[in-house]
Image (tube, one colour):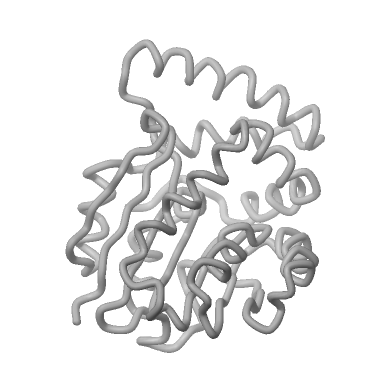
Length: 237
């Protein structure tokens, strides 16, 4: 399944909002995004065995840093297609004293330059909906995982309860873009966000995509009334 997404435009957009990205993330979600990442980390099956982690679409490194603290891995490779986002991640990694553990690298999640059977854990938070071909990305994640390794995906989804859905859609389509545009100075970025969420395959459809890519024991858990969802599954041993 391919999305109608121009990779170059999306990369340029994230480069353009990198400076204000962390502030807007926490401000516009009222800090709930931090809790969502913690919930995703709780789904890791064997934290003590996650010596090698690949965090795709690492952005400014929030999940990679949280994983380093929770799992005590030997190595985390944080990959993002926006160099400006990685430029914001680097000082955060250094400030936490994690530069010996977390390596940052510009790259394409749909064509990873990583060897087969490399990682114990692959994670991606709020990134796979930006892939032109999410199926290809899932296949890449499966390829680089070791047998028995785990994939965890954290992504926005759509609220199902009718009244809350109306309220959330109003916030998502009217208030959030206006605030995001004013602070980030980027006119399109926060209009793109609700559009990308509406286009994204979620729930059972995304679980089916994970199964198609080869993952087994696939499960999902909605968060905060379905605003976000955690998906996880394992590579066959």
